[in-house]
Image (cartoon, rainbow, N blue to C red):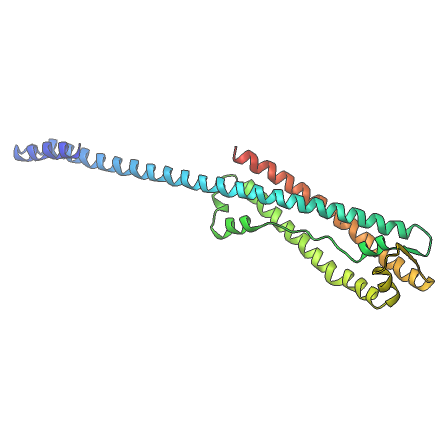
Amino acid sequence: MIKFFRKIRYGLMEKNKTKKYLKYAIGEIVLVVIGILIALQINLNQQTNSNQKKVHKYLSFLIEDLDKDRLSILECIEFDSIKSQNLNNYIHSGKLILSKEALKYAALTGNFKVHNSTFSSLKSNNILELIKDVELQKIISEYYSYTEFVTRMENHNLNTQYANFTNKLISNKRLVQFYHSENDSIKLSNEEDSIFYGYFTHLRNISIVEVERYNNLLEYNEKLSELLNKEIE
């Protein structure tokens, strides 16, 4: 097409028809500009399609990570629920009898494991900003911020409350022997009962708060999973 315009333009120049020459010259320029714009638009569309395929792939991986998180959350909820119940049994028994089950759960804590490798890749490769839904971007970031908070609180409790209790337990040789024995329960002295009643009440309260925290995280998880599945449909 451009060769066609050029041939006409040369012919007009030879015939000294300036006005017609200018019209054809302008037409040739317009045609070139239109061609460039079309090429740019095609390239932009291809880039957009490529980006969306990339986003779709990452969101699929993110859903898989959320599924793994959900299993870990449910395990933590179950563990802390059983733990608080066992501690409650001792607290409300009114007896100086400590069960090994209560002692075992008092010395252990839940361990939520977040699977955030895909989210880290989303951020480091600037994929997060390619998600068209800005609200979805926000919810994804909020979820992983909350997982960091949950993990941070777990570590705090582990390094303070549970460490204090474990040290107290280890310092009592009689209880250490009981813990490793085949007996299911042990009778405590009044002094031991007073100490364990305080510790168990405190640890029970921590477990109740942790269950609430895990349930909040579970809601975040399920909401985000639902939104991501809709996004990639």
